[in-house]
Length: 226
Figure 1 (cartoon, rainbow, N blue to C red):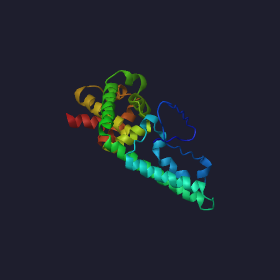
Figure 2 (cartoon, rainbow, N blue to C red; figure 1 turned 90 degrees about the vertical axis):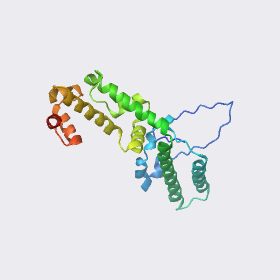
Figure 3 (cartoon, rainbow, N blue to C red; figure 1 turned 135 degrees about the vertical axis):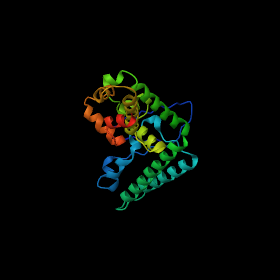
Figure 4 (cartoon, rainbow, N blue to C red; figure 1 turned 45 degrees about the vertical axis):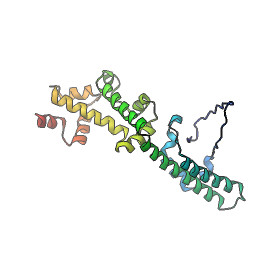
């Protein structure tokens, strides 16, 4: 099961040698106009996931989703009255909430693949902070990390939050502080030199982030370590 947002392109390739079944629910944006769902639908992050990050449903979950869709279908084909839109909207919201629940389940149950992504993230950040790339392009962005891991940035952040409660940006900052502590404790480089080696244009920005993460300034950390 997957979701597409307005403006996204969907291409379907059918293998005529095998049988296919399923359904597609298309909703015109105007149908949501002036409803609570028009605003709340933006909180469902999976509309920004890639197609390879689709939701894998168990038989029970598939039955639940199909029942909700059948409710929408029945209401759509019944006599339209002043209650029709609200009832359909309510069922759409139910479907979205179930999907969100099942995605959270998927993040937990697919432990092997999810932890492989986490391991690849740690390896990428280690390599990046130990290479000259950081001097060329600066601190790694969330988008860059997601591209290197072949996942969407939204999916990666949601996955990490479920695994250990941290988003992608926090992982980047944690690795940054780890490397900063290493340089402060094992080299005689100045704070400005360390900031430069870690991709900062201004040492003040580095010192501010370091203190926010550790409650100590870089110099205070170096002094306390010594």
